[in-house]
Image (cartoon, rainbow over all chains, first blue to last red):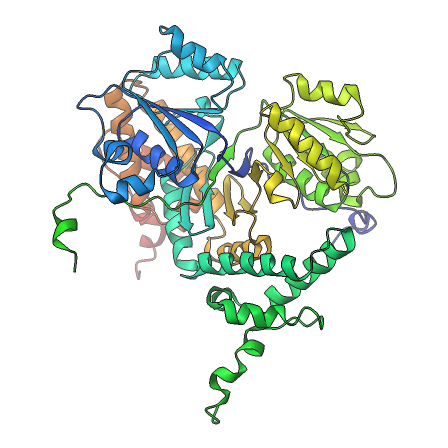
Length: 275
Length: 275
């Protein structure tokens, strides 16, 4: 039962949930990222960065026995897989500690405008704190591994399937709980969800070739049709949409028809007669 | 069956999945964000921003009949709910179009170092493109609604439960599919997952009071114990952990015991005798 006063307030909207962070998929193709450290945490950061495919990575870590095997493999491995993982990304490994408090060249790097983001995963909390401070006075976003107050952004726990990315973030409060939730979610997402997204992207691209208008009306008509079509396909069905199905769906555009999976796959079992 | 050559390569690691974006939980408590536009898309952006709780929001939108009701309510609504939603955030609504191509003051805003991020959701693609260009030459991250090539970051589809945030991102390829996946995930996450995270955070905080060491060894011992404890609790059980249970769990620290839910709730049904 709502109180009379709330009933007489027509304009109430969902209350913001104070998660205290903006969840973003940050595009880094034109960005340069600095990573300090070469241990296991740095290796995990490096994996995320290679997935994100920045323009350039500047790595700082003395080349000694503390370098994690995976880190070394991802940066210098000569196998096809290792090379493929870093293909198209400029990677520079400066084999020394990153110390802008002592090394003028390192400080100059922060002062210049080439570094867009700084991550540290080094076993030196005092130096990390200093790096964080120097980044913040320059408004360069910084992440100090395992020290939430020294992070302008958190990574959360991520699952990836092709173009699909799902991040579980707990505001640094429970990284392990985050990983546990991520595993739960992994089971809830159809295997071919990545393909479903690719295929919807292909369909949208195809539609833009059929109807090239850039005016407001054309955009809205395209958007409306895309919604009607994709609502007629389950995720799993979208994952199956091949070129033939796509073309048959696109053929519905002219007639303003939103064709579903069974509209373009009627013949699939129809010939059997008993379905 | 693995080939002999791959079997003889000991150091191979998971291949990076080229999602082309870095999924982040960006902390904006000290940041100023500019949002241009006052329509329904701007209202949805505004909701996300209020959840993220930046230091300051600078909104640009002429105050006319195009202003979305929700937008106006969130910015100017006088009800308790409306005020609570924006509490602690400096909001400035400049009732004019944001046009740094014509208005020198607007351009100066981009040139200064107070704006950390720019979002536009305006019905003027030409102006949006210009704003995007101006931001990019200044390395200010920008998002032009519905125009993926003009976005340095995407928002994805987000679900929130207290401190828990889950973002589904499709690289701008299928926002509707993203929303559908998000709804699927909503059903897979326990109702009290947000509380579970809060409670784990409280437990960690409590532990830091019991064992105050800041050395590497103390940190590692705390971390190890936290892992052992939280692995003994299901998500739903963590969601129930109140102060009493927390204290009983913390009492296990000294004895190096990782107490599970039933260790601290034995009495709960035990008294009934027949359980």
